[in-house]
Length: 542
Image (cartoon, rainbow, N blue to C red):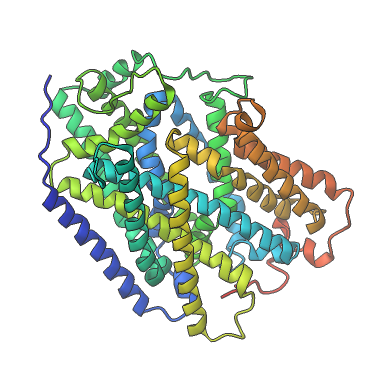
């Protein structure tokens, strides 16, 4: 069965990408002209519409990592991998009834301002540094992912030997620099308001790209999703997906996948500055709840579409023998994984028609740019608010805004450098595993720290800080157990392990250490939600 391939149409595609980039820069400049303070820059004056913020939250969390990684993951794990979405139910309950009512009582800009009230400044600074490390790793993975995809789609080759490894390296490195350079200029202008609105556009284009892929495969091969499913069942290289396993080295155990994703969602919405900064950008409790609801519904829709895309692309490769994913039947795991992750970008390059392909290319570029926007904006918020300026009253608003833009530009540049280094150590690792091993070891301890602060009345800085450090050690040890100890440990268990170790150490030592002050105990969850903060909690750093 023949499937018609698209013509190259390079000029049209590049023109659309250039127009998209120019449009984003114009938006950033337009928003920058209206900014008067760092509250405008970092939290959009706390008046952004909840539906747009909810979509922006999803776009920032999704990025190119999941957009391109999930279809490849379906080759390996199949529909069982979607069991991870059950975490949305648990997260909904916690966010709706626990986290949002608490944070809405506090007018924060940095999520970790709260920790100084609850413990002390050292705890706040430690949490801020850990989140910066988390975001640096996360953003770098997203940029590398987007760069690989765009080089594949655009057939961008630099060097004397276009087919050689050196040319591949040079092409991806130049793409990282291009994405980072554009983002650096744009990020220093637009702030969170520009990020949110460009995220909305990015989400719409990503949704369109997934829908187009499904309709193309169904129409051109005269097949249905049921045909795709039956074809995948014959794939000899798919992972076994048991519902439960006592083997902690089992990567594809459905229970491990669900547990890992549930804790990722909980810790992200409860302790990650990127997510919390969006809740801070809306006006009140009802708006914050709508933000999460929009995020959850959009997440389910996009994940379902991308799962179907994975099966559709598998059918196109396995049954129709389309020229995609060379190596998906390789006996070498690294080669097979790389081939699986490359199928979606190759499909866009070969089968999406000119013009439409340029739109999808622009979406991938925008996804990477938006990721840098979100990460750099959040890192700058933490650095400026938690580490440089803890009291804003002594500085003019214009001076603080200038510092915010400089800090954001420096953060963007650091992400570019980190991305270049990460590319060279990630050539033999699939995208999903790279995320879980590269930086999730910091997310569990952050979630554990916030949990101790909210619910452990006896916890103090003397018990919380050692608990976080032990939790980080546990996260690193579990993420790199094979390299360090020769023991396989599921990457899906890294976040839960680090989280529970942090909680256990903090709770046990709280019975041995000193007692918190009376004012510190008034910053626990129950006291704040029931009575409000003991003093007016306004943003200190901005």
